[in-house]
Image (tube, rainbow, N blue to C red; front, side, top):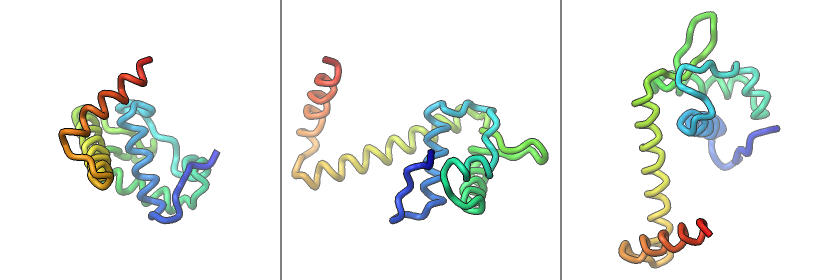
Length: 123
């Protein structure tokens, strides 16, 4: 099944973001081997060169590393994975708060609204 990629943003960035989320969410465990470039490119329905570009960026950041003849693996540095997780969470929170401010909410109004929503989910 192809990935849900948006034509309005660079594809390799969306792939990079998707793999990062898969790593921090635990879909791929620390030290686990990633599927091959060709395999993931087929899943995402993209050119292997595009997937390769995303992998190269993941390697540059240290989240993924290559073993010459064995493929690519997720870092075993769990602290790094947690740090990336926190960074992504902060980015999402920032975007959420910006959206709430655009709707006219002030800081003091946002938290009670979140708490109400969370209580509604528990029921």
